[in-house]
Image 1: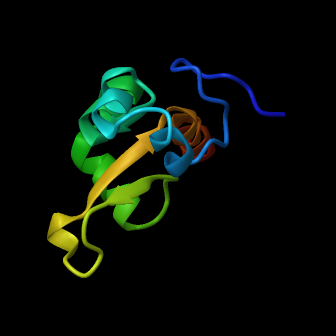
Image 2: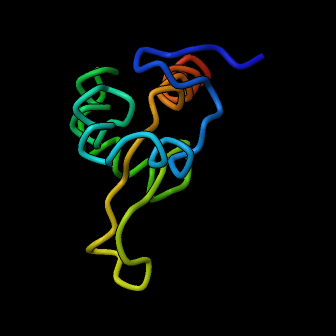
Length: 93
């Protein structure tokens, strides 16, 4: 059921599991993890739209930062989560 993605991690691999193999910066550099801008570039969505969908919990994502201070929370996407963006787009079309 799990399939290998661009960076070599299988679909369903958690960020914690990835961090046992690579640093966070390496994950971003290698395309295993995308920030909002990277996800927007991959999908064609506007970065503000991606952020809004994350805040509304309508897109599968990973957060890093302090949940107690929403201004400091950043949204990230695992490579296999980007598929969820396309699923959402099709469902809304």
